[in-house]
Image (cartoon, rainbow, N blue to C red):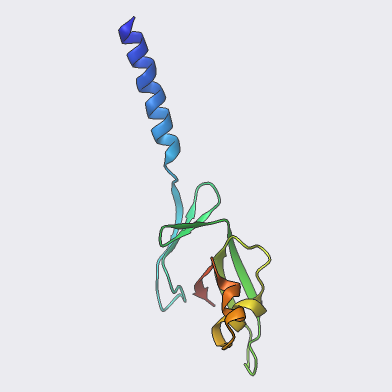
Length: 112
């Protein structure tokens, strides 16, 4: 009887330990050549990870910065799906604190 209970507990423990791990599907290594500014990961459950922080979304935001000759693309990891190209670009060049706050809880991982 004790062996059966022990075996059942051991199987349950293995299942719970296996469920706690979040597998990496893709790795995007930091590289000047590819424009990746910070190493980040695509996880099996569809989330994204950078610097031990998990984000819900990976956004590719396209647009043109003021006085720029060509369009830019920011790849941002965030939990805010409504984040815009304008908000991200203003957070980079504006001197206003409210503009910098738009990126709170988000990180730019690539420039294309």
